[in-house]
Image (cartoon, rainbow, N blue to C red; front, side, top):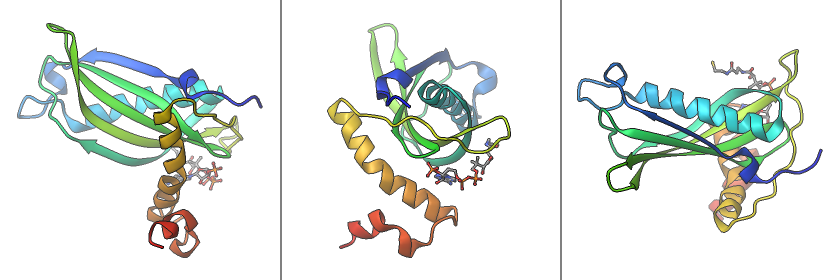
Length: 169
Ligand SMILES: CC(C)(COP(=O)(O)OP(=O)(O)OC[C@H]1O[C@@H](n2cnc3c(N)ncnc32)[C@H](O)[C@@H]1OP(=O)(O)O)[C@@H](O)C(=O)NCCC(=O)NCCS
C-alpha cells in the first residue's frame, strides 16, 4: 500500500449551534460535540484508508471553553498516525467569530478508528508519513497514547507498555 500524508485525511466540518443542541446554560451539549467530533474523525480515517472504519476508542477529550448558542463551530480532524489496522485521529475544535474573522480553540480530542472488511474484521491500513513539525510531534507521541489506551481498556498488560515505561526511566 502506498504511504499517505496526514493532509490527505484533512477534514473540516463547520456548523452552527441550534437551541435543541444546548444544555441548560445555553452552551453546546457535550454529547452533541462528541458526535460532531466522531463524524469528522470518522471521515478523516476513511479518507486515509479508503475502507469502512469503526470507532474503537475515544482516548481523550478536553472541554476547555463552553460553546454558546448560535456559535459557528469548526471541527477539524486529521490522522496523526496509522498502525497496522488502527489509526489515531486528532480533532481540534474552533469557535469562529464571523464578525472579525477570528477563531478560538475550544476543545481537542483524540480518537482511535479501526478499518474493517465486509466481515467486520480488522484490515491493514496504509502507513502515514508526517510532514510538518506539528505532524511529526503528534506522530511520535501517538504510540505512547495507543499503549495508554490499550492499558486502560484492559487490552495490554502495563508491564508490556514499553513506551509508557520509558517515560518513567
Ligand atoms: C474495534 C474492533 C474492530 C477491534 O476488533 P478486535 O477483534 O478486538 O481487533 P484487534 O484486537 O486486532 O484490534 C484491532 C486494532 O485496534 C486497536 N485497538 C483496539 N482497541 C483499542 C483501544 N481501546 N485503544 C486503542 N487501540 C485499540 C488494536 O491495538 C489494533 O490495532 P493495530 O492493528 O493497529 O495494532 C472491535 O472491537 C469492534 O468492532 N468494536 C466495536 C466498534 C463499534 O461498534 N464502534 C462504534 C461505537 S458504538
